[in-house]
Image 1 (spheres, rainbow, N blue to C red):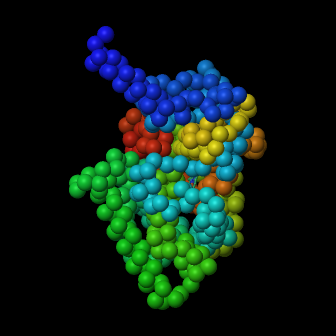
Image 2 (cartoon, rainbow, N blue to C red):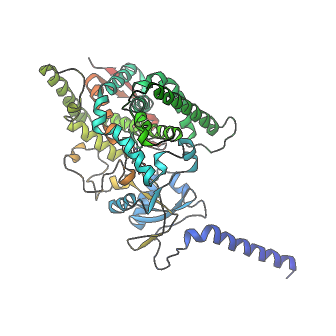
Image 3 (cartoon, rainbow, N blue to C red):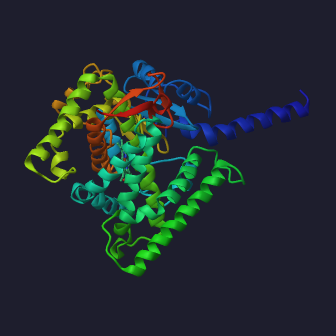
Length: 466
Ligand code: HEM
């Protein structure tokens, strides 16, 4: 054999060994040889099974895997080895053992939202932020903003009346305005349009390639982010000058005891808008769809809401909803719960193992991603009878422990769930008592972007009731 051929073979072998030790071994070979990895397949090196998962409805991919390997299986997506879990107990374990599993996001998302935003942290800083957010969105606090939420709902619905609208787009404006109200209180009206313009540019960059060159979506998004930061800074400076106490989220973040820098405040304000707007708007869009398809349920909700109006009228009570009224809406509340279950807008979330973890005799290696599959838990016949059927009455009985987690679980569980439910109730009160609607175009189909959403955002025409 010629020397050059021998050298070529030697160099190739060396390359393969280096490649294996650097990229493949840490992922595929467990340090704890005594424990097996969960069953499953890893697909092609690096690409893994990303195409299989995203070229179809991801739920078909998950259902197929669960059938083949059981409720816990390994895979490889978006360049990362991962373990997917679909049993309520395993999901609870992963979400509640924060010391073993940390939240994880793509780096581009971290740059857009800001590194200091609540989602990316654990420990003392995270606990402090959670406390500051929770005290402005817990029932005691949001009771005081019902009238303002109601006026946003009324104005929104009046502006859709007699028009063909895309439900999701209009709901996004409604939930955006409610988010701004809870963050900036009444100050928001002066900044609403500018914040909206910038935030719409920012969101286009969330899922773009992180290339920061003039003209790219990412570059435009980063510029819009800077503009939002400047507006927040202006409001902060104004408030410091006036020394007035504010009970909104910005007021909570600005308290001296909170100990946050202006940069930390801005990152978390952008973070809360991100967490609050599309989630709630998507759920509202699904509710409009399900109510339209289930006339008996719509009738029951309408009667419940009309009964509230009638009782207030008869007792001479002040017009407009109050906190007690919203506690007298059990049927409407069950519609929200059932929509959260069937639509499962957040199909799954991501965590990362911070050390080798043993679970049910299997190894979850350090650095692997772990995905609790909310949608599969909500759609398993073991947890919900006839899971594909929209049946709000199933929530007359509480679901089995850990089988219903639309707001997550553990220390990162959604702090905004009470606010979300309140704004949905208020909008539904006005929608069902004053309006009717018809769906336009194709009625079925789901699009993912990233939340599961009715096809084309559900175009409808809204009419006032006679
Ligand atoms: C129906 C609407 C909503 C749904 C379905 C929803 C769902 C969720 C879920 C599942 C998580 C946990 C994610 C994880 O563990 O990886 C979460 C976190 C979060 N949500 Fe919501 N959310 C909604 C509305 C809101 C609203 C209105 C706010 C406004 C305050 C909000 C603020 C947050 C924040 C700040 C976090 C991060 C908490 C942390 O990391 O400690 N969400 N949400």
